[in-house]
Length: 425
View 1: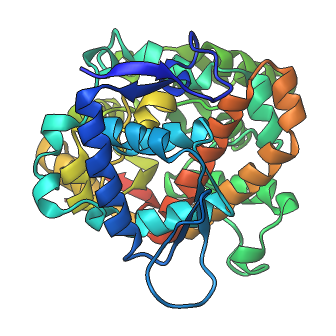
View 2: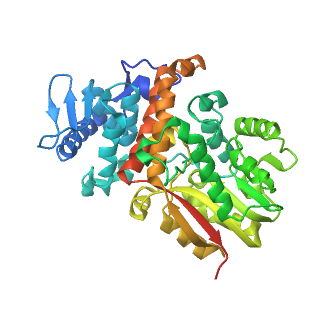
View 3: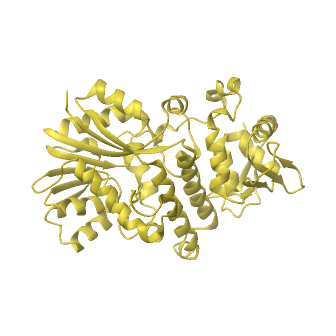
């Protein structure tokens, strides 16, 4: 067992124990030394410049510009890395053990080589020394409400600070015929979010008289746009904060007679629907429950109905390797979640349901730019975030989350897909 010592970070030990306290003890000393060797060997193969405050520099030979990672407290940094692997990397950033010239660019270098950072023999032993997902975070009917609440019930006012007026918390779809994607601006985001929603509704054939089920309400934008087409919408969420604001927005749009928002687990829904739409909800379902998720959709879908799902995805091989891992994202951002591969979705629907993927659209580059705009907006409102009661450790955590995610899409480690299903033989 590791013992703990206080960190120099500005972290409340009661609220941020993993940041305020640094692992220590004989076992951690060995783990930290091994982590330092693995880190140095990996960095010396990467197009990354790592600078210690004492002047030590690591990085692959060669010139040219490259992102810079600066390590301020190496003992703490490697103690965390040795104790918790990549969880420790994120915690070390939250504790300011290291900083970066461009956090996204640094994380992109790591993401692009994620499968090769740790030697293969040690990868095979990961289950022996890395933490496992807590049983209390498995997405059972009992646990799921708590998992969702920990993220989505943080504060509607917090999300308003970095989301656009549509309150859409998922990848936008920018105009391929308009300005270049990399030049996307904040003013482009609301239209791009509506374009994403409209494409899903179009593909699901949502129109006058359509009975729509939305799994995962968000803050109501999709339900509003479906209702404006003449559809009747049932939208389910497990976030009380989202339900409250979504209902207010729906009422302000004059559509309360067409939309019902229910605080309900998707597994408890009854009825039959012509279209079922779900935007970036499957990631919160959990690896063990994907079969139940799609079987539920299959049960609720009318015979000639269609399903439109927007899902973050990862390569199948990486999904299989990491499916039982406990990560920084689980611990601090999305407890109980896991990102599927397209192959896993197709295999599960083929095996357990009558649903078949009819069409899909890859839009990972669009998510990278969506996240860039969110990060810029978040950083521009840090004083407002503080006024809401979120401290500096939280703000570093949130920036790490946005940059970590964007790096995944920019490197190609992550993608986001719009998948359309029907019951075509």
